[in-house]
Image 1: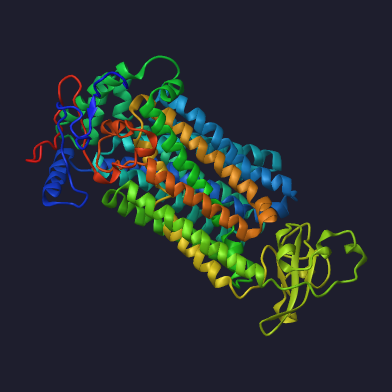
Image 2: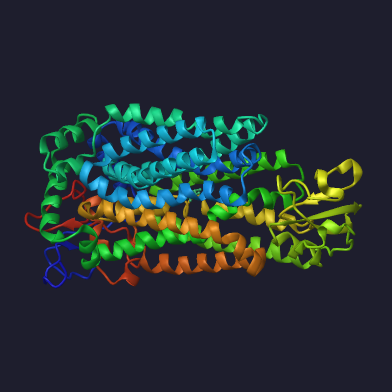
Length: 612
Ligand SMILES: O[C@H]1[C@H](O)[C@@H](O)[C@H](O)[C@@H](O)[C@H]1O
């Protein structure tokens, strides 16, 4: 398109670059005219009831994504004892799911283009069900690994298909909210997983079978639901199935007249066919400037979501809470559920805000707040490290002579070695007679030898701290954790998924989403696998300062590159990427509407106001 002299899309704010452009301004704050317009659209789109049903059944994919990634930590506590798992096997069982999700999300782009969204969702729910069954009947670690891999394949396909499907069936004024519901379901899945972990942790034998197997229920529900739910009308139209596309669109819109919407999608697909060029889709995306920019924005958002450390914070929330003085392990499990619930609750705020304040402002506020909260977390860890209690007691047990644990002089360095824990007594609030001991091979809840070989025994005045040090600055860490979730969950949690579902033209949508979801999963693996090493090299506060700097970098990226897509139709979004990448974000806050002027100049149904 570039260099053709005339852009098929014109920005009304562009200073009249093309005199043919019809334009429509509308203020970021809801004016009475805008409200009227919204009412008119609502009437035109009929009852959104069916769309909500579609969103619900699709978002079960998000629920399974959250459940299967969240449930494993609790299951692992039981599994490692029952199956005598080495730490290599534990790491394998946790990360194979995320790794498989990375691969299958990339493959999902191809499958989506070929077989459509509906078949992909059916496939994902079938794979989820199969994975759940394999996991619940597994009798050895190899079968478990196979189950975790299967579940990961389902997660990857669902993670890239569901947002695309919801975006394609939603009316534009509800799109942000409905796609964000998918992330609400992800965090809901993580919360339910943590409750299930809590409940079944009281069932030491086979409790993990229930934890891992319960996901079959929502997976089967989604599969059954999608047997009766329709394909995306946009995909049908793209494949030339015009009759079904019109039927489905009319069904989704509650039987009202869909001629205008249908024609608009059809003509935009026609135009895309001319624009899209030749060769593999990824190649075409990369060689066509607007889609290339959209891909950079989409992948960048997903990358910064993971680099700002959400999964580390979630995973280590139990540790963070233990630092704050929660000594009891059962209690820590329930407090981790409280963390997951907080994440869920603040995602709900995001659902409420996304179509009100828009994607750009929400993401900006969220990532800035995330960066500041990470600094608070880091400061809490720094102060705790500076006040770290020294090792004052060196037990004379010959079995310990080869252990590196006894070489540490401070709790801080002892705690950063995953093979060691801190064993201490208390005189009031003062730590006394403290030693650094190797951890028991069977459980991190006790030392391999000495006073703490039975774990914490308050009645004897003996305390065992694995992964944390007793500190009086823990409240700062706790404050940082709460602030982090409050800022991250409404914006940086859902927006990367929501924005990606809408920024690509139809021909590039599945491939664009596959790539950005792939980036999300790859960064997820990277961050989770490197955290412990990072903490050992840089300490906890160093690691969190690093995440904070990365979040600040993300802020700059969002300021420059993320345009506002609120209220625009999917067919109206591509031209937002018509300018240089770093200036794509500049026009975002103006909420300008675009109207296609190629061929017959289309008037949108909003072109009825006097501000034309
Ligand atoms: O958007 C989600 C959500 O924020 C989850 O809490 C997180 O675990 C995922 O990695 C992320 O993609």
